[in-house]
Length: 257
Image 1 (tube, rainbow, N blue to C red):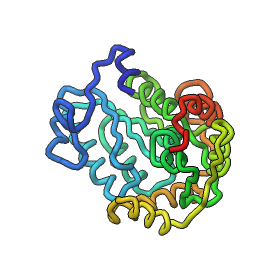
Image 2 (image 1 turned 45 degrees about the vertical axis):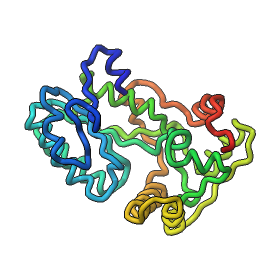
Image 3 (image 1 turned 90 degrees about the vertical axis):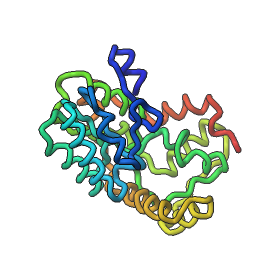
Image 4 (image 1 turned 180 degrees about the vertical axis):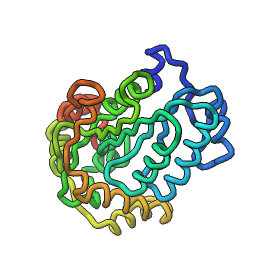
């Protein structure tokens, strides 16, 4: 994202704990100063926009941004999630140019996120049943966000971003197995089993339970549909999950641990 903006000649300030000035979602004292002198801002809540309490933080931060003179806000939201809708409402109610970007599950969850280590071990177990999801490439998301921040024609738009096809997790894992030549499988488990496994790996229960609920709700079938946000925003088709898998497999990231 930052690289794309810099290549367009945009002066970029990264909002992070080590930034100057620093920005930390867990420290509200850092929020206001981060927007001084900023014209456009991209809001991406940590840990997830669906997380309990996210809308309160988004409402406060977005308000501070507008008070500081920010003219355009782009919010990373989510599809069909109640807390995400409240975050969107908090932004769209402000006197500011806004764009909402609501993606499906990222391809990159499989090679950078929480799915990677289980795949290296050979089994991806999730509370997602046999429901399908139109996995989307994070690079497509980045292209849409950059366009919304720097171009005209995106103000007041809500873009749902998906890939071009629906994939069950069994099909997605099978695609990775085919590309790597490994024996991999997907195992559907309950929300409680997933939460307990996260705790067994060392995560606190206060983190594991909301994460398990978030994943089980996101993949309960409510998002098993395609959307045209990438094409509307960029004028091109989104990247297919299979093409992405074929490229990433060559890096060896999914080799056995």
